[in-house]
Length: 207
Image 1 (cartoon, helix red, strand yellow):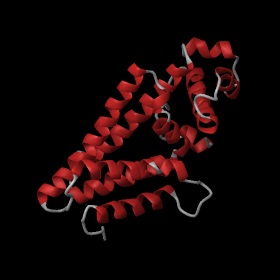
Image 2 (cartoon, helix red, strand yellow):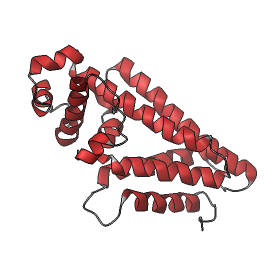
Image 3 (tube, one colour):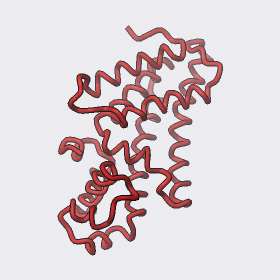
């Protein structure tokens, strides 16, 4: 995780005290690099410059730490998509905003997003159910935009649930492959994906 990613627009920017936030940042780095199951609490504490005992002051278990990371990250995702769904403008405008903003966040915070999106199965049943509910809210926001576009005649989408899954999967997968040393910036990828999705749903590309 870069210093920029750590401090700008991350879900836990307001987590306090500072030690709890540092442990969360360290956990994201470790989970992204080694995977949840291969990471120990000692690994996390060491990255944060603390003793393993210090971690348990703020988090009872490694799984609780992952749950907080996942909850905060998915809440951020819900906010991004709901803001676009509730915005003024045509369905095409709102869909483009949703995709662009969602992709930019997943590219700009790709380390964080990989943990948030791909470690769901490591959560216990209760915590997983909570996060799945947040995912359903993401799905509902995109589905609402697509439904509005079909009703207004802007989109040609015979399978709205399937199209919703495709749109979200396309955006989320950016976190897996995006490279900050690559040729395109998060903004450029976001704009490209917004045009791609508009074509996918049968809308005219944005001029």
